[in-house]
Each structure stands twice: as structure tokens, then as C-alpha cells.
Image 1: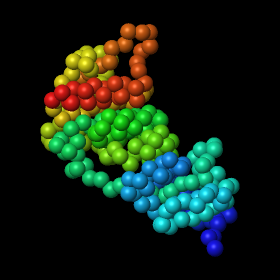
Image 2 (image 1 turned 30 degrees about the horizontal axis):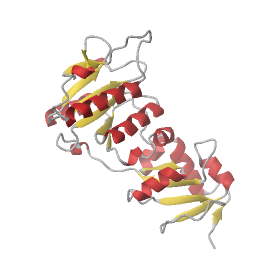
Image 3 (image 1 turned 135 degrees about the vertical axis):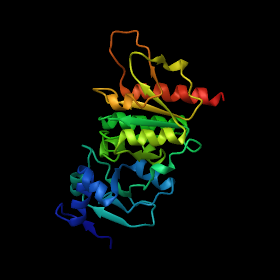
Length: 258
């Protein structure tokens, strides 16, 4: 008989709750939580085996031969980061990646976040990189946690497809990328060429600044050139995820012509 966890005081329930709410705990444990039928099915279809699969007490049987736990709906709701949980989630290992893997021949296009703070924006950028057919992401210092539940949810499973790296020192990381052969392209509204005129043929790092302040002055000094998206209306700037999508697809279009 399958055991069902009924208490929010259960040690494993507390573990999952901390994975959902505390970045330091996710970093320490090397795990994060995904929620929902589609993300779980996608994860399994990509050949990723979770630490544990968790089902609500009334969730139908799931075709999985690994470690499965049942919990009452109230316990699932306690753990969930959503207002309407689907009563299926999984604990997943955070991939271990070395910055040394970021090589131009492997990832000719890299998006570098210099302080993007909104999880929805970061997740959308990851989803766009996935949709465009390739590329890697660097989460620079000051960027929202990649494994924040809202970031994970907004990627729509693309978090499993886009190689993502963490930088704790943006200047040092950009120097490493330059030395590896990347061209560093900054984004700003003035003193920049129009994005559609830019040369994306060399392996390129596209730097996106924070929603509120743009790129830091230190990071600007590391850029080889700057690009902008023309704005003819009355707004001052585009949403960073929208801007990223326009630039990523322009880079894709030009690289496909090579």
C-alpha cells in the first residue's frame, strides 16, 4: 500500500518548502522543484530523472518507475508556489556546469544578464533562446535566481534545454569570454548602432542590463560595441524580455545566412 504524507510538519515536506522559498537552501542542497503535469512530462521525455516524483492523493497513477511519493492535497498546496496547484511536482537536481564549457564553437550565441531582476523576464528569455534553436545563458551577479519557482515556471520547460551558467563576478566572467573569442555586445538606448545593422557573425555575447538601471558602468567598459532597438513611439524603453527576443532572432536570422 502506497503511503500518503498527511502533515506539513513532515521533514521531507519542510525540505520541499525550503527549496521553493530559499535560494541559499537550493544552492546548499543542489536541487529545485518543478510543478505541473506538462513540465514533469517534458522533464521525463528529456531523459532527466528526478530525485523524487510527488503526486497528490487523488492524482491518477503516473507512468514512472522511479521514486514516487503521495501527499494529501492540503500538503501539496502548502508546498506549491501557485494558487491552483496541479498536484504533481518533482524534486530535480541542479545541473553542474563549469564556465569552462562556454566555448564559441559550442555556443556561438550567449545572453549575459547584468542584473535582470524579474523572474518572468528571465524565464521568457530562456524560453526564447530555446525557441530560437540554440544559445546559452549567463546569469550575472545581481540576476534573479535561475531556480526561483517563478523563473522555472515561466520557462515552460525550456530550463531543461538551455545551458545556463552563473557568474559571481561579471567583469571577470566577461574577460574569460573575451579571451575565449567572444565579441561582447552591449545594449543601450543611445550611442549605439541599430540592432539590425549589427554584425553577429563572430561568436557573440549579448549583454542585457537590469530593468531599472540598464548595464552597470563597469560592464559597459567591457563591451566591444553597443546596439539599440529604435523606438518611434512615446515610451522610453522596451521590456527587457521583448528586447532580448528581437535581438536573439535577428542574430539567428543573420547567422543562418552564413
